Image 1 (cartoon, helix red, strand yellow):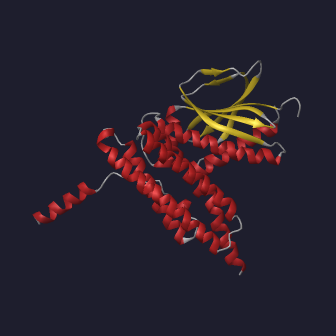
Image 2: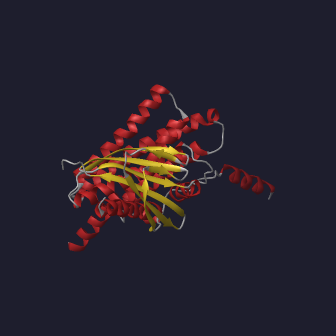
Image 3: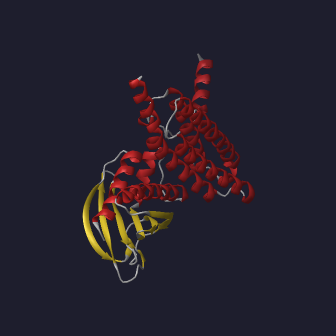
Length: 156
Length: 158
């Protein structure tokens, strides 16, 4: 996996968090892991097609997800209901869309498929005999994960 | 004095606990659009508040429908006014911006049709509200800011 793919998603995540939530995020840990695992309570999976294929997975702890909603909607929530998960999904969709612009600047023309929301931790997704990249992000409202699994089709 | 106290108490009761999505940082510097954005955000806030409060679903269904109709109509009114303004000032990205509005209008209409045909299901309406909120914030915080920037630069040049 090349740095350009990772940076495109990292930059898009930073931009959207700044614009929508007014918070700065920074990269903490970077690990290579087997497959993709939702390590936290609420996850958003975005499929990528085109010059790159694979998936991106955002994984948030419940407390952070509810704080994100509080910042956006000014509403106190105590559960991860459909309103919360749909808003997180749309944020993931927006980040994916912005990442496409960065990727196109690196000459990768891609598309994204609508987000899938996964509630509950420790669900794993088989992505073949390959490894994905796990970035842990720090923010003033909590820590979350960005899991990146992308590859270039062999005939490209 | 007693009468005044009763009036004051009534006023307190009439005040609802409201949520406020609007933030001044969303202003683009064009008064007409900023006023409409604020109104739109207030309507979406009302809709979310009614939808998410702890009242029984059946007892608030009429209120949910009412705030949704209000909000849906205002989305259309606002998009039309904003598009008209963009044309008036010769905004160069008008076509691109209108396409984004059109896609969003279609999305809202699809949800509205499904509610009318398949009933007002709480989870479906929550899904709609979550998307609407996130989309609106991002659209106003990013795409609409470009209109303000354009007008400001144009003003500076003339």
